[in-house]
Length: 494
Image (cartoon, rainbow, N blue to C red; front, side):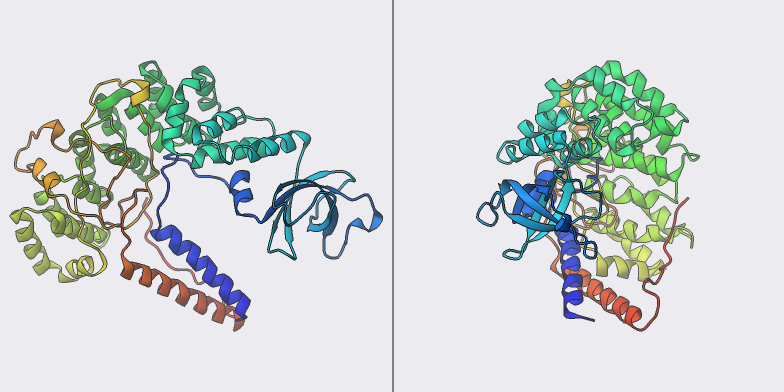
């Protein structure tokens, strides 16, 4: 293995580890940026220029693909490159004399240039983007909003990506300027991609009202794939605008319904999870009642157990024992989440149950103790808003895209004391709701959030070691003529 290839591999590992344990900003809850935005790309480059192809026969090297270009405008790095300077950039597409490109350069003084062709409109767009670098998030979104449905693909994609990474608070502030009728037409466009629908449903959550509920319910009940695409965002939007009363429909369609496909139930769980961690519309005590239905579906129960622990719902100790004892080879993965739930529970009944289960399957208890921090309930910081139809300015669809993660958080004894599992009809305000700010997360594999939490240093060592070992084995197999990729069996759910 060459030194360069090894260092490149290390860089990839570093990026993955940073993503794994680092903090993420609160952005569109169910959106994924397609690519790095132009603004982001410019921010990490040493130089960015507008250039045109040089009018000479020798301007292109057919062997290397390098094209000689003249710098027309310097957008960044004026100390490294000047207007009128000629540079070489690799580009294999059609190059006509005078065609305009955005060149992004790195590694001065021998700058390496990447190349992006620009139309006249794209050039004008790029010039405006450079002026937005120091503007606040709302001002930037106001600009990108006008390009979300632009006929030029590059511009509409860049605008979408900017919304996907923008703080959710900025989207809420933009709400008064969103054209509601136009937004609904975008949502109902049968050609809209899943990512687009997720973004537009998120936006509808901040500017919609009760008049949108019939449309959303029709889509939730629809059997047409296009109407139900982006189901997680659709469920979250519906619950935001309907409030607690909307849970009955979600329970009926996805959580209590044993015939609901796994993907649909999981989408509903993700929406419920958002409302329990970042939303401020529905009380957690109502949300956990919906999640209780999933415990009756033994193949899916492990998905919601961490959420119940995080939200201090200690009413399910007997159910947890039952899930553990009745686990079979097809769903024995539920045992570790059950153990983590009981470890987190402060009640003596949980300790007794844990001892009983350890005598049945000591290995599962050992795995939970070895690989997982003790899950601790999240702090309850806000009062719930249980109004049936909250005002648009109080109705965030989401602020976080839940993704599998492990986190450690500080304990909150006060939160533990607020919910009495012995009382079947606990007050709705017992668990309250949680705002986007300062939201701690349970230390469980199925629990997710973008909130800042301390990383487990041993977990970091484990991830780095495993990644390096994988790289070394892969390089050895590659150099020895073996397979470059070794398939690993994984558990799949129907």
